[in-house]
Image (cartoon, rainbow, N blue to C red; front, side, top):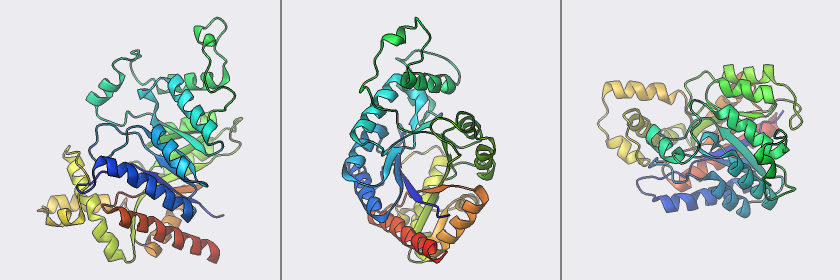
Length: 339
């Protein structure tokens, strides 16, 4: 069975790319990947990160869907704890009305930011306390079904635009909690292997083993998200990946800065301890020529039983990032034809 490729983009800000240009680059990348045959294009919600230009995936989804034709476009994801479920329902029904059959609603539990920013995002909302993701998810589904208890004041509220279904819901996760929940309620699941320290095999197989069919999904469908850097040679890809190296190190130190160039990373005075840390981090990165990365991805798909692979690539240079996706798509297509 052929495993489709998809993309996750964060509108990366670099030391040479201001935030406004990063948003334009996301749209340009999406147009390119639409022509290359990528199945879906998701955008994330992050706040107060100097390396991520977009805190509002629902706005970017509309922009990307308007300039593409074939890909599904969605959130990877909306952090539900930051938003009133009614607002999420309204916005994504609007997107579904404008681009019917092409929108995905990926939901995450994390705030997508630090604790101070999370407090600023939520301080005017009702304080529920603790992890209220499940409660908010249930409310989101109630806005779709209209099955609030008799006499509930929300029965007076009309979710607009009317007559438009909520797009397919996906649960995102970096451990096994969301895998179990996605399986229990019968929705799609995406595991964030690109930043999780959790063994991807465990949640991916947990989801598949425990899946219960629902009205919206009759069998499990799991996406594995990975970070990848592809170039014409392994050596060239390794050089591009030095952006990852210095960015990882800075984040480990609490320095949330724009993505550095490979030249900046090469000039950094690495200690032996830092090099050892980066060597461990590199094991999670799919880096090399298209053939190298595609073959490793095939093995990873076999281990995780993924139905789809979602690529995220924080390469410093925008054209090099587009080339990375293009080289991988071409090689992936050739492997499919040879199978």
